[in-house]
Length: 252
Length: 258
Ligand SMILES: Nc1ncnc2c1ncn2[C@@H]1O[C@H](COP(=O)(O)OP(=O)(O)O)[C@@H](O)[C@H]1O
Ligand SMILES: [Mg+2]
Image (cartoon, rainbow over all chains, first blue to last red; front, top):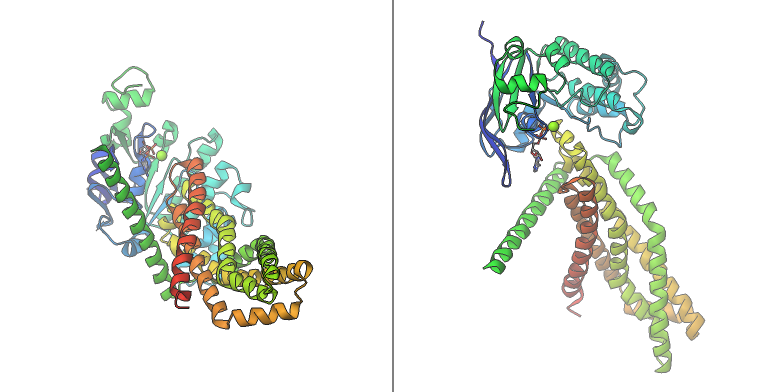
């Protein structure tokens, strides 16, 4: 069966001033699958997630999510579209004036008419599903980096979005927490049944969770395919990235 | 050529600033009209900025009232018009210095804090997180701060006016032996209720300037911690300049007739 496409970048070019970040970039995100994006630091991976969440607009080209063109859509309509998509930020980006519980419950309190007890219940559930307990009343600055990230995931999934975007969920964490987070992403995908895009540098966790892998280099996706295809790819760029060699077409 | 080019660039930057500011004001008004107001947050902001600014506002206006009284009393007694001192102090306090000094103090204390808080939220992606959740940073952050300032700045100005007049009255008596009764009757003759209202109208406009400039500088923060510092400084500088300029224009429009 041909996989269906949930979201895509269509010939996207994006520049900040003179600086061209993405150049005629094409990427398809398969519905119901986990797509991992790999690439060097500063390649524009986070930028792709921000495009998919409608936070920024491409200089040219189109971004589609669930059949909607996000470009040239007024901010008011984007508000609705964004509720189908959640972005789990690299450093969680929780509001530091609110407790963890208030942070995670925020989208529900603002967008639904659910009663407080019901929201509290859903929030507890979401925190539980990322393996966090007894943090409901903590402030973000009282948590470690790994706990913050997981609280960020809880906020991202609390509205049961169709597409979850994870920005470097495991970067800078110890191997045990990395595994925990990889498990969490897999479990959440099962629970929500949705689509996920994960940026990661961690090859071990990529090959554990990815259905598809895309490699970004110099502003474009230069390799894309199912996990096994990428693992065994003879593409010299992919080879060099996977082996971490200094010798190869990617300049060090 | 070079100079023209630079002039052009700065004109464009200025127009961009103006456009951005207009968009911010427009969205805030839309939020207000649709009554999308977070009352609890507004109350917290108002309480904090009111309590936090009260002492410094009282001190600056006390000394200001005292110094106006000192200067005018010495002169007035020499010319035998000591009975006019109360009017001079009250007139300048209510119409000019009360609203302006309070606004300048609050711009330094609160405008800078708003820019720093929102700026650090930009740098740590908290603003993007709000937008990502489909929440408007204007409704969420700007409107409560705008309302808090619009309520508290006129209130602080009332306190400033009163304490400045009391300070002036004290000095007038201590140095020029002008008794409080004659001070007050002179004050009543010089200043009417409408002057007080006009002074408070100034305070309301200054509150909008401080809130919009602070929020705008915060929201347009770029480039990490250093950017937050720049946003904070520029928020204070820009709002103080705008307050002085607006004060002149408003004095001309409100009081120019007489
Ligand atoms: N708002 C912005 N203004 C200017 N340059 C930016 C902005 N956002 C990102 N960049 C630049 O775009 C490039 C890609 O950034 P990013 O997508 O964060 O990379 P990655 O996530 O792959 O490390 C970087 O060089 C960064 O400096
Ligand atoms: Mg990144």
